[in-house]
Length: 318
Image 1: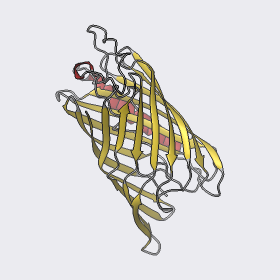
Image 2 (image 1 turned 90 degrees about the vertical axis):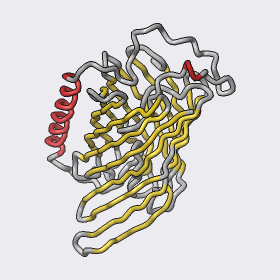
Image 3 (image 1 turned 45 degrees about the horizontal axis):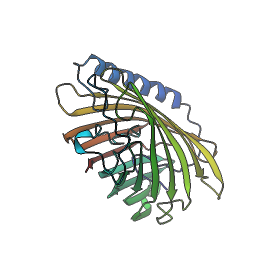
């Protein structure tokens, strides 16, 4: 089973020890360093999530779901896409945000089996409840998966169904509107709502903790996550740990565009569920103050990770 959602997909495969993981990780770190150095050498531009040196933001503590934040006081629009890191900022009180893929395709090749997955129609709907908290529902969309056995030259499986549903709440503790740093907590639960070949049929959950630093024109995201997931075999549970570092910066010469470079790891205590390491690239473009389109590419760094995941999507608020 592979859920191809950009944020919370977890490939389930057999555990192996890959001695090339360290070399792959060093290569990814070198690539990330080169990309970050290129951004640093670029002409100055202000990142969408960066702190403005102007007057401090207005007091918005009194706004709620039933007393919405006025449009002229909305914070900068910072969706949780592209890439896997989450923004620390919540949706303003009384407003709605929708983020969705246009298309999301994943390719894996492991132990003689090629897996191709395609996902679409997978919106995440967010509702601002207070100035510091929103609630979110993620639908893991229409998914098609095909498994091809290289030795026999035949498809061993092909099927289509809608994915599971995720419920989340984002709680900002500081740095929601401005400041040199920001921090949020995001508890979530997954509700199984799909066919067995798409879903593992288990209720799962966890806690995500993104921390953002905003030096000059950069946004540096440091994120950790702890999940309680179903084991690959049987009905047991195990603890999974996700860690991520991402760097975002405006694209020189292209007003409204931003690029992100990211290193991602997912490791757990289940011997039958191997670690996943990826090197992720993404870019978005602001069409207006309330609409952003994006593209992304995630590259696997070990044999058990998906070889490549390519996606594009759109985010808008109202």
